[in-house]
Image (tube, rainbow, N blue to C red; front, side, top):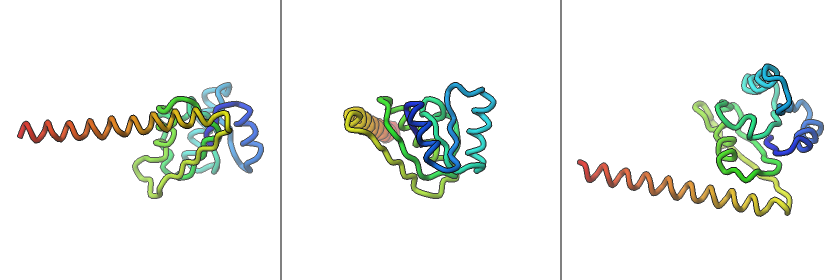
Length: 136
């Protein structure tokens, strides 16, 4: 479960049996223990922010996630999803985004950035292929 606010994290952790909340004010060793504990399957539900756990972690055992609220950073959104798309993932990863009416504009902006990134990547790959053919 990805969230943006401490109040959201607290509410989710209280509402989901067995959920563990990893938040910024935790001791670094405790944070690491809980993040690794989730990776090792010690508990089923991790609640945290993309700013804390969206980079450098491997959660290929996980294939369902939800964003409760959404920040304006496409990079953090993308990286959070990529934590589960790692070597060894055997399932399609389902990422649900739950936003309030107030956050719809943010979600639309992130979707626009996602489309732009896809377009840029597609064009870059096509250009590389054209260059290879020209060099051959």
